[in-house]
Length: 184
Length: 177
Image (cartoon, rainbow over all chains, first blue to last red):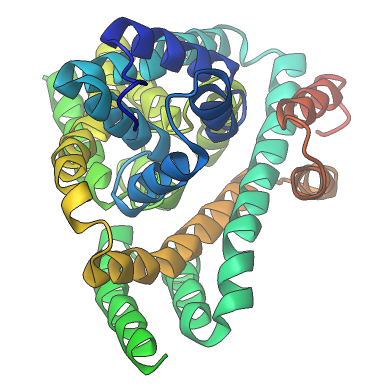
């Protein structure tokens, strides 16, 4: 982040609040639009780099992004403000949805709407998986393919607990990356 | 006390998942599903699919499905505990690492870890997709909705909310079962 673009905690809160409530069905595109294009707090390169850091750490990616952007702007107060802006309103909205669901979930029309919603929402995750897999398979099919398939089969087909699969596969996959890069 | 016990179970489950959720909440969804439906019997498969759908339809980050699982298990306190447990460990780690980041930005090991984790993460997200489709698609009409929605998201740059809204309307009319 450049020196002239150092937002205050209040500005961070407002910006991430607006990102959160406009981010129906995926927040990331809105985060980019707000932070890079509208506010100019990050250059496009800053954004990509910050995002890749957010993605290489555990935890929800956009939440990590808010922590990093906030901490670079004004330390832990910035992180806290950005996080609260991002999560506060959606937290309350989703609980209201849940309450409506338990009040009216038994009505046939609501039940039908949720069935349709669930089917469509699962389709969006299929699309996300395909989008994520495509560049890896195109660029390095032999290195990435076995780990994609292995992780999928272990969790989806064999029902293994995810943390164990991660502990088993990640070190091998990282080692394979290191070896491939040494050869290149 | 039942509620204190379930709050502790929520804190443990989501707190642990927070630190292995490489690639975000979608990557640990199979584990949330396994624990909530199969291991602890907090809810049925249909409940889980509905909660996931609600979380997707609400604005904001998609880890909110953990908020709803917490809410379903132990009401508002459950929602708070699940959300805090899902976020706090990874947030603290991220805050700490962000401070070191500039120093190690171009380090080979950092790049290797990122590149090595990527395919495993993609496999987990694919597993999430599989489990969600299995939970949501009871019958060919629903499978068709899933297919249409995936195609829409891949082919169009429009907001996916359109797709969710259309599917909800079709469902409300009663043709999906």
